[in-house]
Length: 393
Image (cartoon, rainbow, N blue to C red; front, side, top):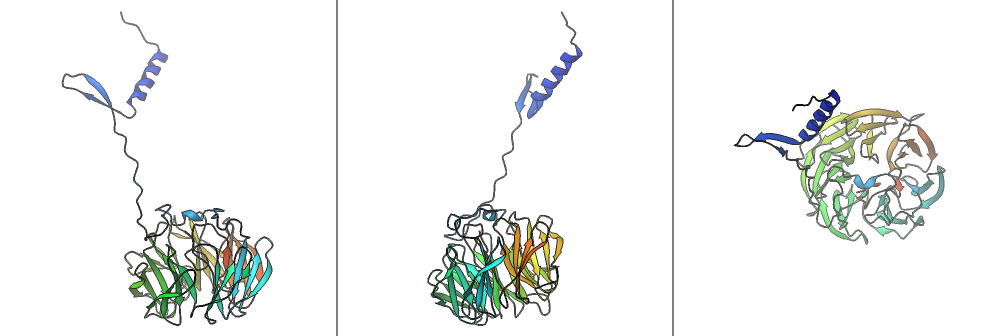
């Protein structure tokens, strides 16, 4: 006896049939019987593993070297440190200490001759002032803001730390060498002479096994093996009169960006292959490079025209340019712990700029000493410091 199905019953039957078919496959066996088998579920893509430099903390995210730098993600070591901006005044031989909440100078610390950068130590516990012509490093306790006894180190133009915390690396610009030191006592362990002029800035590869160094006075780049403490590559930039400055790696670790104040842009380089770079124009006097807290953008200071260019990593292009009111000479600096403010020194104008990273609006313009240079915003998120004005992983 046959029954006639209603329209609603047919609709339900069709829906159940469709549901059963999702993720299944219909086949016939040798006897002609129809049977339903489940389609194989594809395995999730495997995340590539990064074999880092021996002793280096594990890479948190192989697709983002800045994964530890998210807003407010402070290490237990620094979470109780007061938030300050430390400004080395290279022609006044002082460090101006700014309260970022009030935009006021709360202290001026006398240091050695020609302080160039304020550098967080690998373990985050100390700030080192690089007194370039004074041939000393002045330690500052970021918990109290007090300076300690200077340590003798020759020609400390800039200071970095290997990703495993084993060595401090001094960029001895005029001595034409890389000095590898004990990161606590600053005693020299090895000297690596270089044939370029003016070693000054650097950044490390995703795995920490090498770093790229800029040589500003000869327009060259170096590639250095971290573990061997040895230069393994050297090339001249393809621009007459090139003057490379700050160096930063892309979040995915595939490219290095090198600011060039005479080429007025950033060189884009494959660090692994160390092949010929290409130039991306940004503005006159390109100098400092700073990554946003979400790893999407990089702020590029153009010292020669008083602007900041914004580069979008996801779009691989420049998207904005911020102009400082009344101009200025934006140089080196860093991003606030919450990611909302970009702090830059005004190298030739004896001032510091606070810039809103959402709008590009100047929030404050603070008079400081003469020749302000590599200021450090501290504390910042991250597990450890690679040096300079604050490169954190």
